[in-house]
Amino acid sequence: MSDSSILPPARLRPEAELARDALSTPVLSRAARLARWAGPATRVDAGGGLVDEQLPDAAAELGLSGEDAAADAGEAWRVAVDTGLVEVVDEEEGTVRAGDELSLLTAGSPQDVLSVWLGALETVLGDASVPDLGGLVDAIAGGEGSGELDLDALDWNPEAEAEFLDGVLGNLYLLTVGEDKAGDAPVPLPALAASVIVPDDMAEPSNDVLEQVSDAMMRLDDQFRMLEPVGLVEYQPVDEALMADADEEPAAQVDDTDVARYGLVRLTPLGLYGLRTRLLEAGFEAPAVGDLADKGADALLDGTAAYPPAAAHAETRHWLERRRPLEAARELLAAARGSDEGAPLRRLRCQQALSLVGAAAEPALREVLDDAELGGLARVWLAEHGAADVPPPSEAMIFWLTIDTVAAQLAAEGNSEELRSLVEGLARQHSGFFDTAWRVGHPATADVLEAMGRLHPDKRIAKEARKAAFKARSQQGN
Image (cartoon, rainbow, N blue to C red; front, side, top):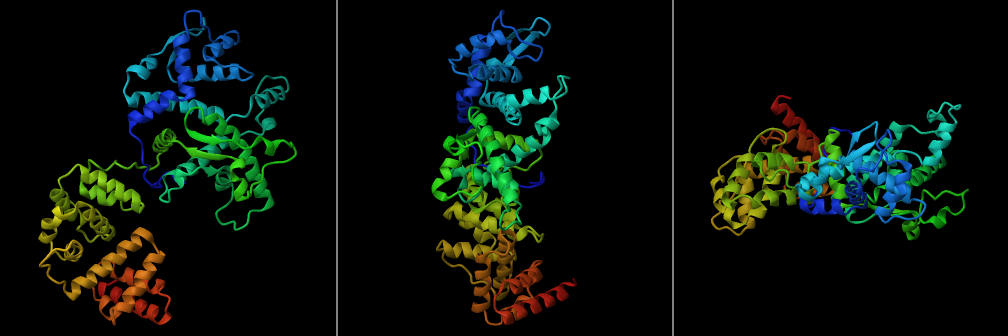
C-alpha cells in the first residue's frame, strides 16, 4: 500500500462513544488504576518499570492471579509510564508520582482520552512485535556471554516484524472500510495471513508459501491475543487442540466448516479509529465520512469522486443536513460545471446528490435548463420527479449528455459489467450512433468512443466505435 493511496472513507463512531470504549479497555483501565495506586513507596528501575518485589502488590491491586499476573501488571505499569499517567520524579531514587495525563481520563475531553489511549496502543503494538521473553533470554545468552541481544540467533528483525504487523493491520483496515460490508464479519486468520504473504499474481500458492502462511498465522495468533485487551480487535484465537501436536502447524488452506477453529479477527470501532489515526500520521489519505460536511460543494463533489457508492451517499447526506435544500442544489450545480477531466464524474455525483434533495431543488434545476453542460442533467431530474412543462432536449444535448454519462462511469468504475451493458444498449437503441457521436463537442468524446470500441462484444460495432474515435481525435486536433 502506497502512502499516496486514497483509502475508502471510514465510518467512525462519535468521539464520546469511542472515549468510553477506550476507558473500559483492560489495558488502559489497569494502567490508570496503577497510576492511582502508586505512592511515595513505589519504586521503579532504570527503565521506569516497577521493581520486581512490587509486581505482586501491583498484580493484587489489579485483581490478577496466575502465572501471567506479574507480567500483566508489568505491562499495565509500562503503559502508565509511556502514556504519562505516571511520571518518574527521580531516576536515581526510582520515585514516581501521578502524571498530568491521569486527570485527563476523568476531567478531559473525549479527544484527550483518545489521545492517552493512542499512546497505550503504541506501547502494546511495540510489545506485539517483540518475540516471547523466553526467546529473548536465549538470544541474550547466545551473545557469547556479552549480555547483548543476538538478533541473528533469535531470527528476529525488529523493523521487518513491525512492518509485517502494520501490513496485516492495514489489510484488516481495508476489509473493514470496504464497500461490501466485509467489516461487519470477522476475518478468518488464514485469509488475513495469506493477504500479506501470497503474491497477487500467484494463482496457486506453492508449498513454501503455504508454510510461510502457517508461520504467519502463529505469529498473528500471539499478536492478536495481545492486541485484544487494548481494544484494537475482537479476536477468537486458534483452537489450541489444533496445536496439540508440536510437529504440526495449522493449515494455511482451511475448510469453510472449520474456519472458526483457525482464528477469527474483527477490528473494533475503537480499533478503526486508532488505525485511521496511525495511517494519517504515516502520510496516507484516510478520509472519514463527515470530513466534507463543512466544506463547499466543489470539495464534496471532488472529494467523493473516488468514494464507493454507499460512502459517497453517506457523505452527501452529512453535507446536505447542514444546508437549506434550494441553496444546496444551486451550490451543487455551480460546482458541477467544467470541462476538465474530472468534470463528468462531478456531474454524476451532483446528480446523485440532487436525488437526495427532493422537490425543493426544482427551481434550481429549472434555472439551468439552457446551460450546455447542465441542461441535460436538469431535464433528467425534472422528468424523474414528475415536473410539468419540461422542454424536450435537442439531439445535440442528448448526445452530449450520453458522452458525459459514459465518461463519468468510466472514471467511477472503469471497464465494469454495468458500463459494458450501457455501451451495448446505446449502440442498440440509437441507429447510426457513431456517425453522430464523433461530432459531439465534449472533451471526453474520443476517449468514450475508444472505450466503447474496447467494451462492445460485437466486432463490427467495436470497429465502428474505434473509427468514430479516430475521427473525433482528428476533429479535436489531437
